[in-house]
Amino acid sequence: MLSKKWAVFSFLVVWLVTTMTVQAEIIPGSPSISLRYGYYDEKCEDLESTVWLKMKRIVHLQHNAPAQLLRLMFHDCFIGGCDASVLLADNNKNGTVEREAIPNRTLKGFDFIDTIKDEIEETCPGVVSCSDILVLATRDGIVLAGGPYYPVLTGRRDSKESFFDKAMAEIPRPNGNISEALRLFSLRGFDERETVALLGGHNIGRIGCEFIRPRLSNFLGTGLPDPTLPPDFLEELKRKCPHDNDTINNMFLKHTSRGLSESAMSYSQRLSVSAFSSIAASFDNHYYKTLMRGRGLLFADQQLMANEKTAAVVEDYSFDDGTIFRTEFAHAMAKMSNLGVLTGSKGEFRRSCSRLNSDQ
Image (cartoon, rainbow, N blue to C red; front, side):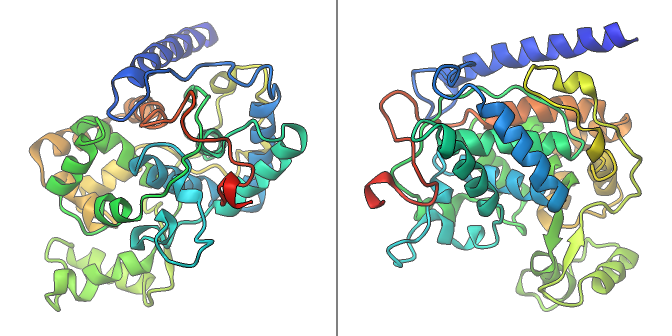
């Protein structure tokens, strides 16, 4: 049985690595120079183990950290590519950095990246990009949250610019319809199935009630609740979200405990995570089962059932124990991490993730 699991895992890793190497050439906005394994072997050989150990400590203290980093990475990669542009602070106080765009004002996890960066800078000053740290920390956070392991290539450089206007216009909205969501994902090279897989990241974390409450009493400015909400679910949401500053857990279904597979961490730098099995969320297919019952927390989530193709994927993901979803989520996240990266002479390796080197 163990050998079979190892064989399956080995196949998935080879498949992911092969696909990722090709995608670095074909994803819109990607550079001609590919990312690679071992980029930091001579410059900062303990990078991945350092990120892993720091993430273990962070998740132990802040269980919601994986979800916060997953959202942070998504917002970064979706606008301008995975280039750490969202990490730049508004040092000039003019409100035009990506981080200050309305969709990004509720992002969290910046301090986690800063903490990891500070430790890396002590041993490897000026050679590790914030964008590589963000994608590695997110991947490790997903694993610590019970999600699937996927390989991450390195060699990204950090952007010297920020994209406020693009972030204002192109981050998918919590109340957005399915046509708009599919258009935005398609512009970044993701098809319907990959879009549904990526939105499965809503398995973990908490959602601010400010994104849910408009569905409960003033849907799209009508002064009425979202008519697609089942009456009992509407009342449940009203009880759980009495105020905008409350939060609600994404885990609406009782989840079964899923241990963290040691086979999913079978590289030399990865350490035992058994101590985290009690806090790992169930990264299974409960999200899709709730959509099948009309109980998606966000309107944008439930909209996956409003399109024939995405609804078919939701149904597909909801059938088994989550294996299909987890496999395809890993593939989609590996693809996402390569989106529009800067390599070669483009960008820079920031010494501080929130500031350009020229501003320090």
